[in-house]
Length: 361
Image (tube, rainbow, N blue to C red; front, top):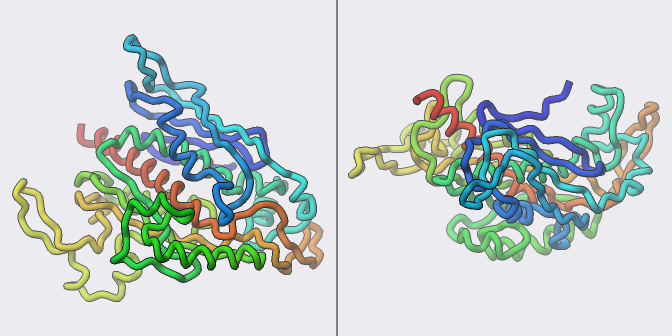
C-alpha cells in the first residue's frame, strides 16, 4: 500500500510519475464559491518550473495546469469552486527516459531505488518514477488553491543557506527573492552562490541547502493538541518533500542552546487586548496552537543524489558496481525547494483553518 494523500479537512492526493504522460492532484474539501481559474495557479508553477537557469535541471517543462473538475461558471460569469473534488492535471512533455537505461539494474545511492524495490518488488528507474522530485509540481498546484482558502495569510519562502554559506540576516530584503535564480533575499549571498553552485555543477557534484518559510497573518488559535499540533503537522508536511532531512520551528535546535529567560517570548498588553510579543523564538506556535505571530520554519535539503561522480553501489542481482547518474539534474535541489515549501505551508494552514472552523463553529 502506498500513501498519496495529505490533510484532514482540506485533503489533496497527488498522482503520476516523472516520466509518465503527466501528473497532477485531486483536492477534496475545498470550500465552494471561491473564484478559481488556471491563472490563479500558474504563477506558482512558473516559480518552481525547471530549466530557468544554469543552476537548475535543464529539463524543459511548461508545467501548464488544467482544471478538469470542481469549478463552475456562475451567473455573473465568474468561474468558482463548487465544493466538489478539484482535479488538476500537468502534462509531461520533455522526458528523456533513455538517460536512465544504464541504471535500470543498478541502485543509485541516496535515491529510493533500493527501498522501492525492497518494498514493492518493482521500481520505475526512469527518473525515479513516483519518488522523483517531479511530483512536487502537483503539490505546488494544490498549494495555489490552498492559498485562496487563507487570503489573510502571506507566505514567503527563501533559501537562507547553500553548501554551508549562509545569508546575512541584516541584509534580508524580500523583494530580492525574485531577482536572482536562488530565491535569495540577500543579494550578496546570491552573488557568492553563483560561483559555489556552478562549481558543483561543473565538477559533477551537488550541494545541500536550507529553505526558510514565514507565514504572516496567521491568527491565534489554529492547531489542536495533542496529536494535531500546528507545528507537528508542519513538520510532517515538510518531511514529505523530496530530499528533506530536517525541519526547525522557530529557533529550532538553537533554542536548546539558550537559557529559559533568553528563549521566553515575553508578552506585554496590546491596545486591542491581545498580547504583544517581544520576540518569536517559538516560531508562532505554543502548545501546538498558533499565537498570532508569524509562523516560521526552516527545512534542510540534502545534496542532490544524482551526480556524475562515480559512486560505489550494487545491482539488483547483488553484484558490486559503480554508478554515475547521467541526465539533467539540479546541482542543488534545495533551490527549487522554496516554492514547494511555500505550497506545503499553505496546504497545512488551509487545513488547520478549516479544522478550527469545524471545531469552534
